[in-house]
Amino acid sequence: MRAMKNIVILISGRGSNMEAVVRAAQAEQWPARIAAVISNKADAKGLEFAAAHGIPTAVVPNKDYASRELFDAALQETIDRFAPNLVVLAGFMRILTPAFVAHYAGRLLNIHPSLLPHFPGLHTHQQALDAGHTRHGATVHFVTAELDHGPVVAQAEIAVLPGDTPDTLAARLLGEEHKLYPYAVRLFVEDRLRIVGGDVHIADSASPSAPTSH
Ligand code: GAR
Image (tube, rainbow, N blue to C red; front, side):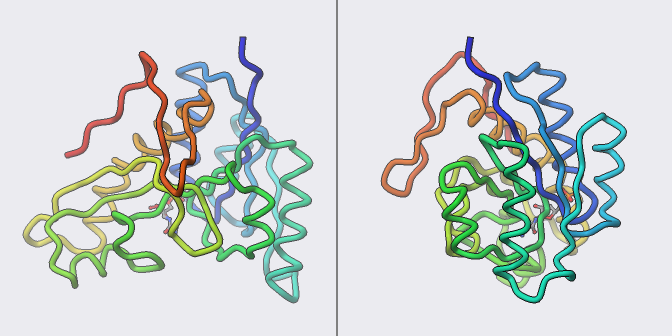
């Protein structure tokens, strides 16, 4: 019997990816507990879902800190109270300091709404449309010091359709994110991910199977 893993999830807003991870962990009875949901915004909608599900919540308002370094240090202290094996960034809209990223090396995942290495940063749906891409998607990756550049765990793809706008693309992609992120987090929980020379190797197992893309 593997030890239970503690997962801390960081959000800045709606928290629908957090919700998908929480629901999958419960429904699929992962050997994991969602130890806390932490936000840099007191009014993040996702905090309500977490509290309603009995998950401890905390707010570390970035606006209360004079520098990125001070904020990240306070955030790290709050996260570490929950002894995380894994920290999951789920719409956490902050650029993290190298010291913070180093502290969580190998146990910090992010979901980014593009097919990395395409379109790091913001406005990814607009960027995909402007570039004339016919495929768009989302990427789950380990976080490294360089923004949106860490080893890729898994990606989900969608077609860009005639008439798509940033909003229609975002909405269609979000449904895929809600399958992709639980899939990737579960791989971590099951000890199936290894970072080898900047790539992620996924160890075989009977389950879970990769979500299909559309
Ligand atoms: C998601 O689409 C996620 O991929 C994106 O923000 C949204 C959060 O939605 N993340 C980023 O842009 C990170 N740079 P959610 O709060 O409902 O999960």
